Length: 399
Image 1 (cartoon, rainbow, N blue to C red):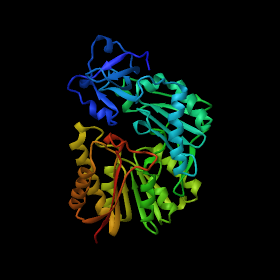
Image 2: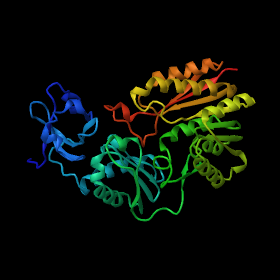
Image 3: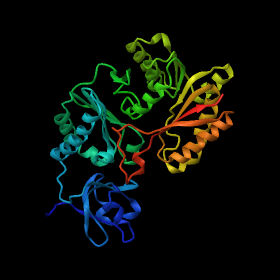
């Protein structure tokens, strides 16, 4: 079928085989960037050809980004409009409807769901869209219209913040693009707990759904225990532990606003008497708790990405080791330590080794009980390692 799109071409030594087998990105040094290609507007659509001029599919191009092209459709003549978005969204929704009884989940996980650079989290009648690539910004009206038609949500919030948008040359922006802004934080039921998601002003989309199965596993270790939840955000592990019968939970975070939302979640659950918060730098609080002689049956540390990209890998691994070193002495004999990493640059083996070194330097030894990853509403594209970023290790520590 004929198409009306411009063409862009791989350099002769670029690896077309990976693209044919499902890898979704073309890096800037792999594409011929002549004047015609340089003139394409960020987010423009083009047909990608290999060095022999054979079409590989329809891509979006941003010459200002290291990821210069992203594969949208294997059909070079695909029409990117409301119907195209609706088909992708319906496929994503069918998976989530099978996984979860209530509409609280990640609906679109970017490349893994066929929408490169697009994240959509759903909070009941509210959806939060992160258009983290230039093409998604350009096609946002069609995306939003399809989202409303497919899901029936009443409110769509555009969260245009974060590092990824900066890499695409996009400005920061928060806006309600359909319906009206929620009156306040949205209550989210998950693992028996209630979380308060600030979809207009919180981190990312307001809540981290990726940890759902790991919250559940850790909560199963928490019955009757005192729990320490470090880097807690809105109470992720701590509130799940209380729902499962923990004796108490102490949430530590640097954000007063996040801890206030955690308190509100505890109030919604009726567990305020067993829940406490401590605001401060996590490393300093861990050191202070150690000096105070505090001990817990379960300690969980879920820090931000210490190694968001390869240049930060060594420093990031040292930070993960330090977390483990400071946290391990706080665990009661025979208790449990759960350590998390959302750094895709640190693979599982490197993260596991850093944690083991830290536990040893903290004077403890342990066995790994569980290795966790993001929930199934965060599917992994096998060809794209970055889509499988989350790693969770649960240790039982010796006496």
